[in-house]
Length: 79
Image (tube, rainbow, N blue to C red; front, side):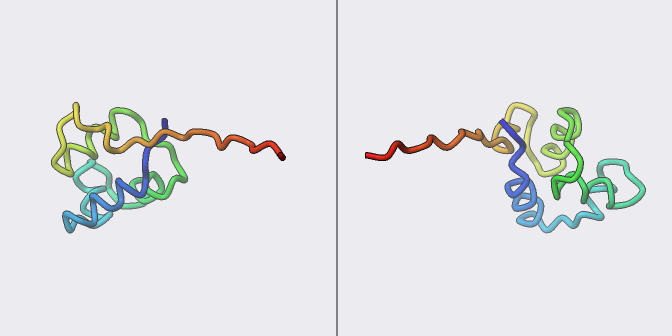
C-alpha cells in the first residue's frame, strides 16, 4: 500500500486549504516540506499522515482513505 497523493491533494483543495496553510498547521515554517511530501519527492511518515488527515477533518481511524493498493499488472500470455 502507498499513500494516495492525489487523494491527499484533492481533499486539501476541496476544503480550500492551501499548501502554505497546511504547512503552517503542521508546524513548519515554510510550505516546502509539505509540498515535497504532497508531490511525492519525500515520503510521508505515519505520524505526519495522521496529523494531515486530522487537519483535513478525519479521525485517525479514517486514514485508510489516503492509501491505495498497488497491484502489479499481470502479464498476459499469448494465445
